[in-house]
Image (cartoon, rainbow, N blue to C red; front, side, top):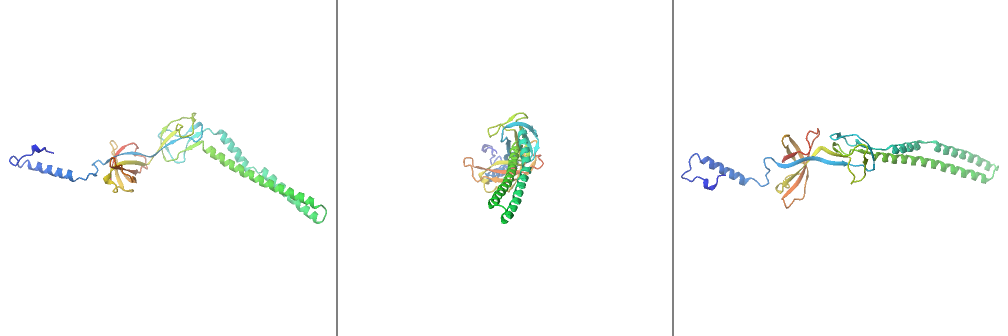
Length: 287
């Protein structure tokens, strides 16, 4: 802008200075009428981040037997990433699995029940013909009841073996650490042969990041509150040297405004199916 003292007076104004004054007046009018909440030409500053970060720890203590991925590897949800030593658990599972299919005890109990049933039928006939006392028939009936109880006990033992097999399978599964997300391995903190500790305070074994979709948090002036809505599209421009342009969608708009700064936050989801957009890159967003 031209300082006031440098404005030409009417006597010194010439045909050549008039266009310059017109430009100054137009620039001043544009600056005055521009709304306070208008975005700069480059947009609002933002940062592209993974949609979530995960630190994998073990729920049980044990020696690390295998780590199936390394830093930078892509992982799928449910993929086994870490295996702890589990020889004793596998042996116990094999024993429980065998007990769950054993038929010797059940067949033996069934045979005793059938024999007692046949014996009782004969005793009934003999009692009717009065060849034996009623007490003999009652004793045989008691034998049948015990044989039937043995069958039930054998069935219960087989069912308990099946339940024990399921319990040991779950115990063995705890020694396999699976990926909870589709993403990439960002860090490997432990190695084969080390002891994996349990609990939140224990050192993580692997760190993962979900990179599809990506997450963008942006701070906006309060003048845009109510104008930026969930589902609205936005243009994302990454910083140099990437200089790419992408389309994201608003997924979260804060309902509380920060009174001190006069701003509020919004979150955008940026699809990244091919993984060609790196996380951690600065960007600008325009609505």
